[in-house]
Image: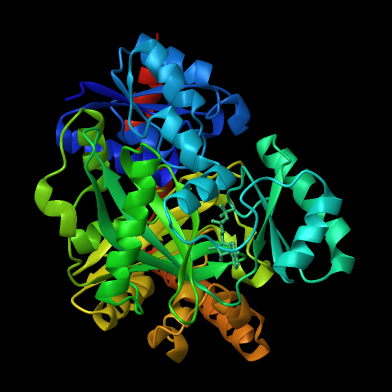
Length: 512
Ligand code: ADP
């Protein structure tokens, strides 16, 4: 097993990995940009080192700086988390040069499966159905337009190097084609340094259902079942659950086998996800492979009882997957909501700033994977994901009821969050019946009656906290008028961990 691990990430996923390291007796080494100096992952890790200014291309994306820290701290492993460098084959290659183990797939498998067109070609070779469209990047807009007519509108222009919905444009007609091509290719170039595009038929209101796979370095590949991720805002996941409300055991088996076949063909090892779109007739089509841990991995952990991060580490250390895992059946139901610092009343604009108060939910069936604390300032520079709130129950109904209860307990003030939105979604009859698709949430948010409801609920969170603040101020004034102000009383909540913070700062300042 490893002795010391560099965590090349930040936020809740860095915290999640540190926790796995601690349980395994592995020392953890965090890295941080200037604005992350007091972040939770820095406070929790055994050691922490500065790697540069806030922009990620000058810090979290700098392989040279990460390798420098790994070398100087004698790390024998590097975990990339998700995002940043997690799907960049240059990181595992740099790790190999430094003789440290990369916790993830081999770079060749990342290349074979990480490029959307390469993965589509491989999928069609091993008879995994793909969304109709082109298997190769398309060279010119003129050629692409002819192909679009052939596929039939609406089509989706997608970036070969895509991710996070960037470089993706829906095209409904010939007239829209030239400008959509220009926008998609320039966005793809800015985001990935690769302007290449390909075409897919735009499926109407599909479900997004993905298969979690695990592959060891000895040729064993298993499916850990599906996650339903159809609740999306602008093609990005917001709520995930497992099992899917629509999958039959037969379809689960078929999709699991397709995912395993593809992973095997790509020479994959470690944890990965094969994403599919599923139409109303339950036909499934391969979408893409994510060659890393997913944000929504806790949903699978809750229904399988497995710890995916610890398994990633064990696989990277050369351990074999137990044979019994060929058929892991889900137990109960789990659902996750992604809590963002964003303002649902202002087009979900990011809402960075200082967290003035924070009360975490708990109780039966609740798990909170968080990267924040009271008094911490959410920076403007990164994805504003604050936490993932996950509920488990014996049935879908019970896990939803638990999530609703936990969302009522969850209170974050000082910044806006989307907590109120989840309370609305989880009360919707269509959602409760499992009648959802990838456009459902966007349609729900556009409906005028509903959007005011959503707003009201978000407001009520704020007014609840305003009322709570008023009550606290009244209590404090009453206390002062009765007892006077005592010198040297404890400073307010922001500084509760001051000792720890200052201690850590000293440690950071003394770093090699
Ligand atoms: P990215 O990697 O940029 O996130 P994906 O290919 O994973 O892009 O797709 C993200 C989401 O976009 C899907 O979950 C789905 O909602 C939508 N989408 C992608 N391709 C199609 C398609 N061909 N038809 C309909 N919706 C699609």
